[in-house]
Image (tube, rainbow, N blue to C red; front, top):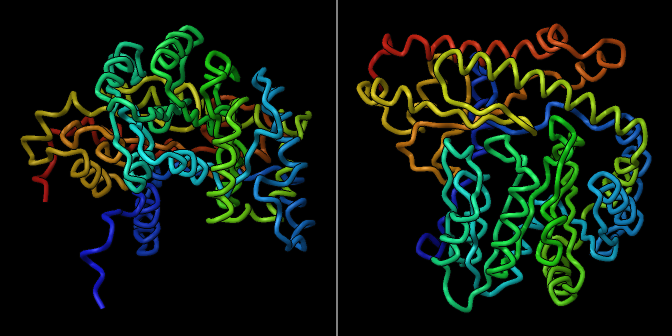
Length: 428
């Protein structure tokens, strides 16, 4: 029986695909630097792992909205860390923030979804799955890949009359690792208010802002901002699938719809992980030290990586949070084009073949395929070992050279190869 004519056109997530491709190459004995998949190198705090073990017997259904103790703990944590005034009754727990973003868009019959370029790979496919219209908000290397008020205003003009406008804004950003200043957020908030945009503020990397300062959009646009977050990035628990959504006051109708969607799809996030997450959201010295050590390691590693990449002539901005660079190879465009390498996907394949470095090409982030660029995730090191060492050793240049050596080796290898692009063999 063939369903081909009736099936949706949905490709696998490119982030998961690059991870599987890297694993396959490694299984064949190839030396691969897995810099294409954005998984935290760190694992949860030991006491959180123990809490998961201690709650393995919890097998019953939990309220659709989430474990009350978790909603209380997570709300308190975010309020203390970000200076917000969120309410636990407006917090929803889901099986990762990814499904909560999807549910928020699914709550609307028709919408225009504003997505920055570049942006995380799953936003646009999710919107298309729901039949929404996607409007891209353009940016560039020269404006640090930031959404600017004029660009957002222009994108809103392209939206359809009478349709709900939804914008997804993620920072520190995936794929570029950059954030926004207070002034930039205030200016964007003014445009959002003008156009009555519902903003899904994907703040999953907020607590990994390298200098420990993070301003939520909800500070300046509280009435129209839904914050999503979770344990995947700052707590190193991507596989646990615990996500959060914080709704603004006065959105009871939307909350009812979201709970309806949740009850008809995933029912609830699983019980053992929700109980363990209560411990993860303890805002005490243990958690703060855990976060501080992650940020210190990532900040130094990012600086060293940036030095190597820019020395090779690659365009890239200094990272401000998370663990990504959006690397721009356009200074080498003519040389690559002469070798038949005229798309970012072809370039990433050539880089993988010649250096073993796996990157994720630009087209999946909403950037034209011919714009030679890619996301680099500086995460291929043993984060557990590094955090253990940080209990006794100072986190400095020498520390990062020692415990993040494999990642630096891959990045420096890529940089060395780029310095010799004239000697490229013809692309296959």
